[in-house]
Image (cartoon, rainbow, N blue to C red; front, side):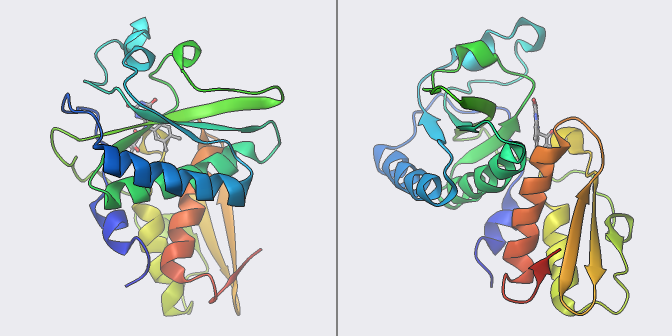
Length: 223
Ligand SMILES: Cc1cc2nc3c(=O)[nH]c(=O)nc-3n(C[C@H](O)[C@H](O)[C@H](O)COP(=O)(O)O)c2cc1C
């Protein structure tokens, strides 16, 4: 078993939640985890609870998400790699939340940015949010590209490569676009490229985390 293997397999986007606040003990564990992530990454991720406005004040998408009242606000200093970092570290929060019995959905479009209640300091920006709470259900499986469609030079690659690709295919991506390619470069390098698409740099960070967790960080180096 690798870290978060079960959570990677069981996570699906959940857009309908129960009207039930996050248990205080669970929220405390989540906040402690976010604190660790922020000190390691330099990001300023925040858990905001009991704020329905962020998901109901977007008139274009009113009703898109049901009873979503809590979210992770992914915030960091403006930088060229901010979106990828938000993807990578945000997905760690997603998997931790899943481990704590919560459900999530990455939200970069169907919310009201100006109603987000997080603190954004000078020089920082909000990348997107992730709704979090107790789902009406655990979500469902969706269509996926095949390993072949998202890899290059995979023939002859070690077993860890295919394990990483399988986890990468379970990663959430905007509109399920899965616009990425993982190339095996013998003997132990991997290149991850993101094709152009909405929010595909955020996707890239998410995919990177899933691949790393499953392939094992000691087995390879990113090119
Ligand atoms: C960067 C990013 C942005 C997303 N933005 C939205 C959004 O604005 N609204 C929404 O309903 N879902 C959004 N999603 C959720 C995706 O539609 C969902 O992850 C994808 O369809 C795959 O399904 P899964 O998460 O169940 O694996 C987003 C996902 C990602 C990774």
